[in-house]
Image (cartoon, rainbow, N blue to C red; front, side, top):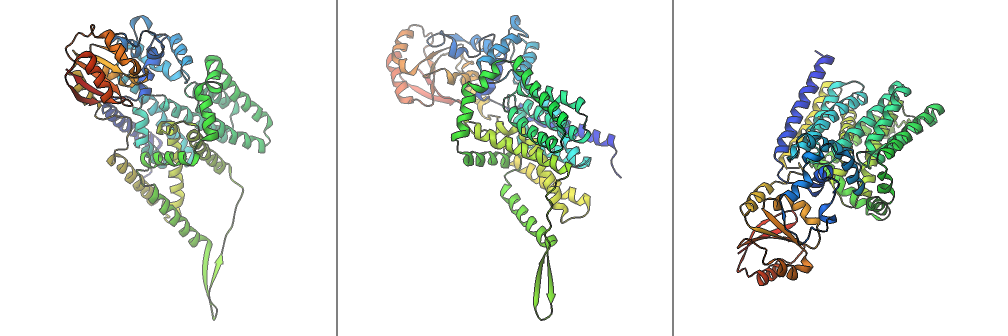
Length: 538
């Protein structure tokens, strides 16, 4: 008995509930933060002070207490819903402000408090929307075969890539949302040709997408280029003009809302860095690294076997459908080739090709633009990659299995094996397991003064959650360590100290100077944080 439309909706809702429960489970396992996750809270909530440890003259050689950190990552009662501050902070940063404004809104509801669940709530909300959008796109691609759309949502929603995206406290779940919405709106335009309805929506999506992350421009460019070619070859000149106006209207609106975007893209260090990387980067090496991310977080490490199966299947398909063998009397066996090519694509095929190429081109270009290789940059392409891997598997398996339910069962088993491998091998990222224990260790010494030794202010951002366990701390430049210790020797209240030493420094040299100037007799290594090694001196 075929499932009705309502039953498919019920299954989708149940699927989303299970996937969100899974994300919440892994969110609860998160024990630490990437430095950019700290920036997410700081840039959202610090009132007109985006980088206090860099900009404040009173950072080094000043005693600070935990309130110094709270002022950075929490919203104060006096500065709730201060979006002007969010805009200012982002003008000093390298990203657009939409994600930070939303996070600031949530944090403003709970002033003077901090929780990673504030940001995770934002990510979970957009994760739900992402599954819904992916379902609708998959229905379009599979021509309303809803069981296949559900399989796509299952394969992506439970993947390590989706979960990693959700537990990483940055804007990439939101970027994924706008990438999928942009794709779905174009699917509707291709299908229904209701230009007056969808062009304004595309313009709005462009505006919000570019206000979330500048990488949205990359995906929008490729998908828009395919649609413009479609209109161009179809000689739909008025529609083409309307579409171009809509796209540039969305970009223009984004710039009006956040004028600093022009500086960020064209003259900011990240913009010029991206151009330099495009010109001089090791593209093949970077692509190899990003393929590894896809292999682990979507395919469970089975890429080599998948490639082997595809090669064998394609060879088998060619032998079965394009080659025949005839036995000719007295002449042996004759081989006949039946190769027929069709260069013209149907509209549906063109749309699928455009969506797939846009996703792959996005991933490749972002890989070449980025200064470091990181899975988060290609998270927005993951849903479409899963979709078209499923689509390709459907057609490949169909060449050998005729019954539709068996085809679905075969592809479902493949995805199930890959999902199991992802969890079994621990491919979920950004959890930072073990750092909760580190925080407990340093918290045992909360009564001791903390010396944080580094040459610049950068390391403290990532070590913030550890140093905040102390009642007070003082940052000291490595190059000025001896003279600085001579200044503060009378200010140290405790008979022992905790020393954080930036990992790039020589611990022995630093500890020897501290021993000479402060008179400590011994040092004990107690922990290692993201940026530092921690010692107890007494």
